[in-house]
Amino acid sequence: MKEVSFIPKPYTKTLEKGSVSWQSPSNIALVKYWGKYGAQLPKNASISFTLSNCHTKTTLSYERITATDDFQFEVYLDEKREKSFEPKIKKFFERIEEYVPFLKDYKFKIETTNSFPHSSGIASSASGMSALALCLLSIEKQLVSEKISETFFNQKASFLARLGSGSASRSIEGPLIVWGKHDDIEGSSTLFGTKYAYEVHNIFKTYQDTILLVDTGEKQVSSTVGHNLMHEHPFAEQRFKQANDNLSKLIPVLKEGSVSEFINIVESEALSLHAMMMTSMPYFILMKPNTLEIITRIWRYRKETGSHVCFTLDAGANVHVLYPEVEKESVLAFIESDLKPFCKNGLYITDSTGTGAHKLTK
Ligand code: DP6
Image (cartoon, rainbow, N blue to C red):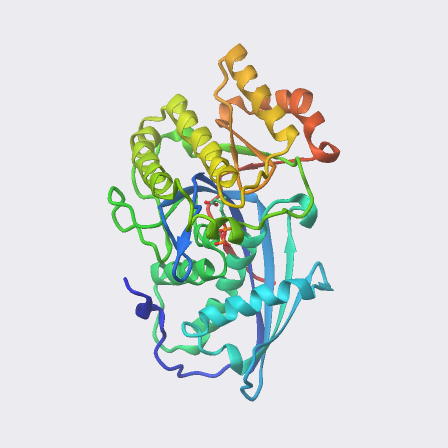
């Protein structure tokens, strides 16, 4: 599949006015994407669990206008105009215009809400960009005469979402999504995310993710800046190889349900990601003292109880606590008594693997 496959044939239908809505989830990477090139292409393959409770709902209203030179749109978060989101969306529109060439023929209103608090430090770019990409594709579907298969629809949605935010390419489907070309994974692509199609042990089908909110402020260093710092990074090539090797190692682990090996890979990935930040130039640290306190307590609890709980991190201070569903009761009790005191305002969100985005009907 090449980029040109996503350029549509000239539209044969017209649409005057209407709206579409999608709900799209967040995802948590087990093998991390950190470093990109060209048009949002990843330097290594990554794999993530699609989440369920953490999601964005977006309604895209459109009205046909005489085509203008610029994009006409307004963004609303929780019913309030959010001008600060608009430059990022404009950039997204510029990147995808070639693939959805109706953008300048309409005036859009983008209304979005997140299931998690905006200030939670949970990145809304994956769920937000994927929801918007899906809305745009639902409009395109009505402008063409030929039938679009579900496979193509999902691939193009992921392809567009990727151009908004790399990790958003992994939010269309679930529960395990690979993004990036990987020799051991047939059909994997740098252009879009694909469903992990190999055997998965039951234990990984209902995995739990409790997100501990450690720092809810704005990040000091954005992911985009962090990705760019990988260009001159002394350990970059080694890191990209490590990630691809870790993905190879995960294949038998996911099949056999080897949770101990899963823990080794996932925790090492999280710390390697943050090690890249600490060894960039300029260097930076996104973990906070409470991040380390929580990690230490998870390790201690695991040693003392034989639990299979582990952690992963995204590009921030929050901790994702991962564990099998059978341990839900005990791990939640541990979180409540031992980890909650290290969360900002005692806040955490319980989540689990999900199946991906879905269209909303009014
Ligand atoms: C650490 O997808 O947020 O969460 O492509 O610049 O929008 P952009 O970056 P983004 O990077 C996410 C990085 C990560 C790891 C991951 O999700 O794989």
